Image 1 (cartoon, rainbow, N blue to C red):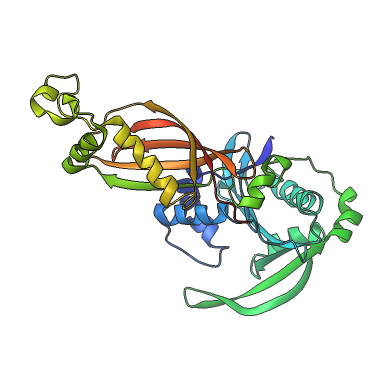
Image 2 (cartoon, one colour; image 1 turned 90 degrees about the vertical axis):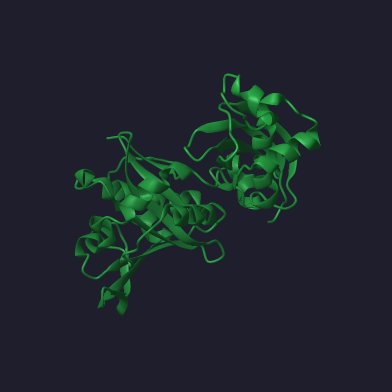
Length: 326
């Protein structure tokens, strides 16, 4: 069985949202939340900026089956918390828990150089408590009536294992190493410093009006009949007036300067491919996503603009100089 942990991306958000709201998962969570895709995007952007939280998709034989995280990473005290869930119940009972637990300890103590890994578990979840104990985690305390769900109070068990203990017992266990996407490898060292990481994203939406097209024509001098003349445009392959392609593409700049990376961002280059026309009255959404970290203050962004139907209008990539905030 090929098991790996891949870093989450924006395309995973809807799937994670549905996973998180299934009874099999929420039973063991502190909240029975009702999530929205907009809320998921805000959460994603927040954790992508964080140096204290890491989230991976658990993938088995190419199938996404669950989520695992390391949170509250404290580099001064060298500790973190961790948790995971298997959303696809058909994969439970296959020894995945063993491999996840052992590999996450190796990652925490080896790659991140931490000294302690902690977790919290509902008292009624005796199976998971037993698994953690099997691999060296000790029960360090109990929080009485700590979580209230649906009017009922639940006790929480606090557990932890330190580096010295794991190193003394790890050879007792036989487990396969799994591939773990490393957020903080040398490749992404600049991302840690500048708080820009792969997959980080933001967007801007606008409905294009008649005035937008007319003003853009006046500013640029582009009075092509396709854009400003209803009669002539009706004879074209589009059948009606279309918006200037560069007007549509310009909304990418709106994201860069106002939302992400935000104030202080400097455009260095932009590649553009025009995929489909935009029409007056269309609501377009420009989105930028971190594609590659090129240097301490230089990043490559995937850039695109889509209409309200999800059709791609403009695609390409941009290189920008970002404000440093370490």
